[in-house]
Length: 318
View 1 (tube, rainbow, N blue to C red):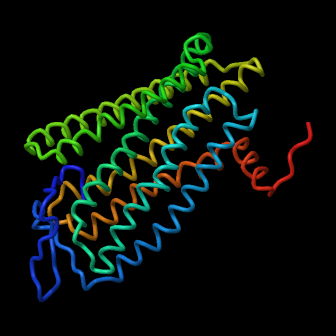
View 2: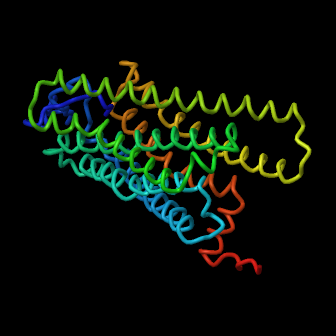
């Protein structure tokens, strides 16, 4: 279900048609689930079971590699490490929780389905907004690194980046979880919808800021190419910073693409079905497995560090 589909906390399941085994939550009577169709829920359970293990394993490797490998101790990896922590929670918390809902549908135990689905929606969107805010923070760090190279060591320190990561986590929690508390307390849904609208505005501002930073980065990179940097060390450093920025831009693009199915489904009544909503949620969660794969594909240091940690490659002799 989408974020603005608020539901009541009482009478969690309403059977619409006993003969066809259809049921719907009280606040979403148009969104029905067929309890006789158990194949698709089991398919989702299988996919999510494999995906949550992969997401947890890969992101734990990324997080550990940044912590223990000296070659990955640069400032640019601090926020990537924090993002890996957010993706790790998707694999260990939100995706297993979502899979448990599919199990309830498959075994036809839906007494508390609507209530649990509300919890699942807020957890999932909290993780998604956390990833979005991380992308904005990473874009800002790359913006400073490329456009204000001289001031970068002064403006961007490890301590400030850790503080920024903490602010990002708290921002995601304060943006998305208060409506959950308001709804659980039984307050008027108008207040819940107002907060959800506020969360949507924050997400849009974050996305616009991310786009602004990457546009400025692109302009600066084009300017450097026109000026034809001749010093070898300066040129190598500029290429490295640009490659990291391109990787971060690809991460942002992957995140935005994972949001698209959910936005399309929620905005189109004809496409808004129980199946399309469950699939769009899965696509949004699968973005957490794309990030570590992009790290390894785009960054040779990350790739070598992970392979060495897995004992698939011998450590390089210095």
